[in-house]
Image 1: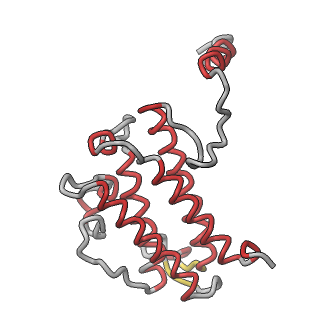
Image 2: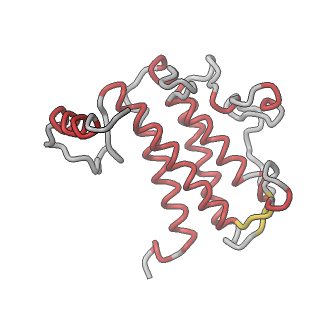
Length: 199
């Protein structure tokens, strides 16, 4: 049996890969670039990290009665903040440096991963912000839910980062993007196909 035959280790591995893919998209950019909204809904690279950190704390913390050990950290968004700002966990405070948020998220990852050491996958928790009729969920289900969420946001980060400097791919060592492709010609070919259709 290999390490990835164990269901808990599979989940921990894929959570870790999603975090790694997301954080790589921040490499080499300055505070302004990391914070700058890139789309009409205001999404920024650093905002994605703040959101994902709070998602993981919530799902792997209170859902299972686990307490996040840094309750006063400025990156931890209190529940009451959402009453006045529904985007509170996407808004990185000006006095929270990017490097500190990244370090915070790395600690969050360790906290989330520890849930798999502390609890069996069939442990039932309660998600406080889900409707009562479906608030009960196993650690297994929550982990799959969070992997899906993190991967979705890592995909957002892929697109935001490519807008800055063309950096694309899964990870620094495994880009999964053809390196020798003539991208200008490829985009022109796709554009020509699209233009055959009415708007």
